[in-house]
Length: 252
Ligand code: SAH
Image (cartoon, rainbow, N blue to C red):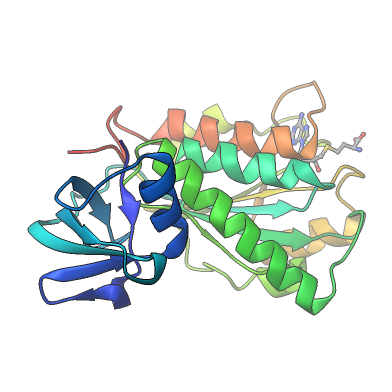
């Protein structure tokens, strides 16, 4: 079983409390009883071996048996700026890139995107995507999980992670620059930002904004991929080129 994720604010002394979603899963699906053991991660600093003590108010009260610091991460920090594809395709992208080890997902509105959410709906989407990212990370046996931001315009997104070692955007019109070439020039980036355009393609204005944000255009080859395919492939290729000792993000 993978790691359960605890909000660091819910760790107190030698006890911690997992939320109601985990409570339902543990109590009713997995039928775990008080006295049984779990592995828990706070997502960034500590891993815990715990023993279930009970299910007060549907939450999971656990006693900490052992605490370990997080192992050092071997690969670059990966942030994906993804133009939001239609409906369930964004759910799919969040799930797959979480499995592949993305660290942050910033959903963005680009000029040719299908729709822009109202404020309340944007917040609801964000929490849905965040939940999908956590479930996928748990299933993938990750120690951490990606943070998903509230959707924003490309212009607003450009400040995010502006000190990254490398920023790339995937451009269907690019013919020269490819990841392999960049790999030769940049050997150990600490952090990489990736941007992927919408189904309708990047606009001239999107390209200007990305250029001003110091993103370089890169090709993914001669075939045109759907936006969510491109985002997923981009994360996989970056992991392959720069990542990921094979055990990156897995249990110690
Ligand atoms: N409608 C456009 C394609 C958009 S594909 C057209 O027909 O030209 C959606 C996004 O995925 C693109 O904006 C780009 O970011 C990425 N993408 C898809 N295929 C790509 C490729 N071969 N190289 C680089 N980026 C690609």
